[in-house]
Length: 242
Image 1: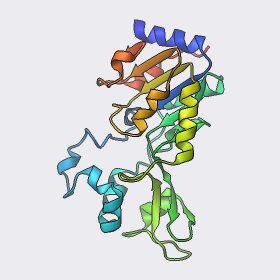
Image 2: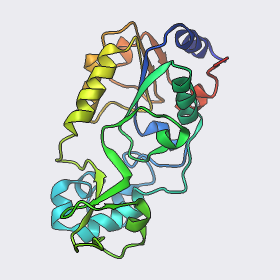
Image 3: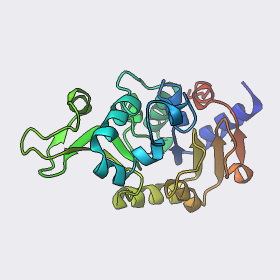
Image 4: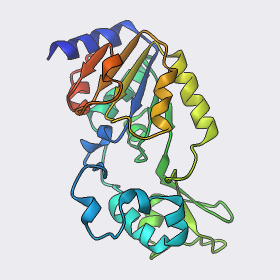
């Protein structure tokens, strides 16, 4: 165990109002790729970059192409929680972690057992008819041909994820700000802090310890009380809870 991880253990043992703010790097160790940086996605099969395909205007203009990409590159139903997800859930059960604020849409924090999860960008596990608002699970999207259609009214079924050009949910934003503002410790993990407005939530933290855990540099590194540049699952697997 490195000195930095030992210090993280000491921080977690000392404080009982910790908020975790995470991104794609939390789930890459579960086999869910970060489309910004892996497998040459920008020039594979698709005539547009991911940010374009995953935009509101593209979804409206070319829904069949949107869902072709979405099914292949955004749905990983066989993925399971890794050490980071599991340890955060355990720390919540021990009264240490008060909330997980996540940019991820995979539902793995809940699968690991976390109860207070604020999903800034929604979840692939929830899908709703745009006309009658009927709910559909992820398997309905996977097994629907082309653009998924509501069985009740024939409306288009849209994933409950925040696309580019769409705003974040106001209540989730308020809850995230409230949790971060009240936290004694904010642990930022597995995120480059490049996506706004989500990354801007860090500005509300006024607590005692800012911890950054990320393999690559982030804009907040210089402000961190503790900086660990290692895979987050590897770090959390060393967190002691007894």
